[in-house]
Length: 154
Ligand SMILES: Cc1cc2nc3c(=O)[nH]c(=O)nc-3n(C[C@H](O)[C@H](O)[C@H](O)COP(=O)(O)O)c2cc1C
Image (cartoon, rainbow, N blue to C red; front, side):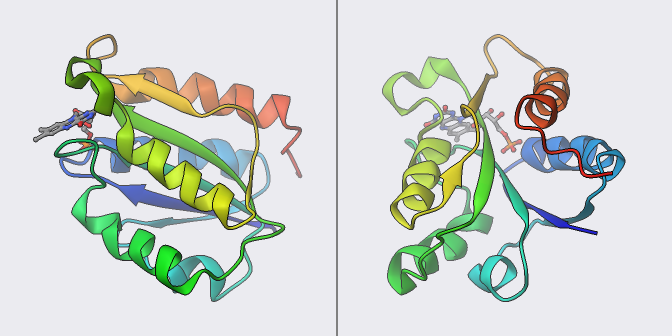
């Protein structure tokens, strides 16, 4: 069974909740799913990753949540090269923060792209000003993502 890894960056648990809610959708599509809520770079590169989903909120002024900082720091410092990695990205944010809206998700996206990874489709940006429960937007988005990108393997 191919392995889908979900990497979570969260302060208050919203992004982790999204990861847990979308997990069954990938299982139904034929994947073994692992969620990393204290992600390390080794979680990504130390074992086979057929597909990855990054799910992160933003804190501070466009900053990554603390739990995913070591992952991003090591990605930048070690520059492992991620050619062949395909991923999706769900960013949680709040447009009332203006220019730093979804800053962490955008930064992570740029880091991954800079390592040669390929994002499938567009990034989902969930705005807390418009959507109270991020799951409400993330679940249909993932369903559509799986269909559009033809990710079903079962
Ligand atoms: C202290 C603080 C700072 C934040 N800074 C930003 C920001 O710069 N940009 C943004 O888009 N959202 C910002 N947010 C909004 C969160 O990213 C948003 O509420 C998100 O849904 C929280 O998800 P989580 O429960 O996974 O942490 C901030 C929230 C807090 C409490």
